[in-house]
Length: 352
Image (cartoon, rainbow, N blue to C red):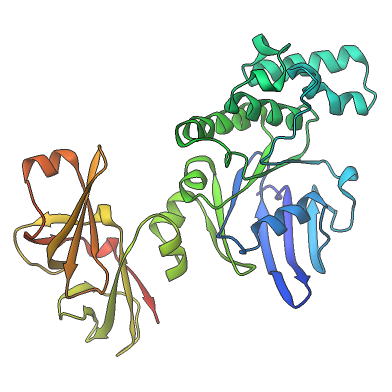
């Protein structure tokens, strides 16, 4: 197996009495698109700044290409950081903005032009090379900032919430565009985001951080389908939680209905069962993994419909996501009593 491009070992960072990063260990591989995901204050931006060299760790190692760069200044690391603000020079053209870093390295003019032309073709803005930043759309400015970072051919490109300033539709388009450029250019990307959908769409692997600790890392599928903690389950996507207790090898909800069998809780232990809304389906009969409740609200989302059920099995409404076709075939309204069911394999259980 090939060695990781980046190895983070036991990294810690304190700001006074606050431990911003608490002994994180991570491996990031060559040509990987890796996402650091977490809420505000989770430590993700501090970790990114340490990778860039703008913050130095109090303990631990940051090993890039086999070399410990923990105490190496930013200008001596083969790393570039792309900020959310883009920070383009307003008086320079697109091509001049991209060329600036190469010119500061005093590369030959012919080499600078060749590399600028190459990256302009990759970001599909070669026809706008002569325009100024204020003549570009938000998405185009974002691509210019990305090109300026990529043209120096870093071993590692760090992105600090690069899509935060874009509207929802453009953000969705740029998520796919960033992934395309990363695939084409073959550079390892590490992105910081608090947007779960963004991380799931773009990243090859995701790390969830909370209070400076690494909770879980894995592929988007693993993170979404197999969360290892209640926090991870709640943080990624939408999840229903049922208070449960272990009873003779089964997990039983507050109303006595069986939520699932064979789940890992000790005898008599209390916990919560977690089920994704899209794993629930409408049923006319109560069964093994099922709950019955009254419809309290219905939210139409175009491709699907989200139904809110008040049940005795959970303190919060149970959310059920069904397709628009299913909703049309079986109309339901507020106040209706409905039963939903799901498979045991779609249930996660977490001890209290």
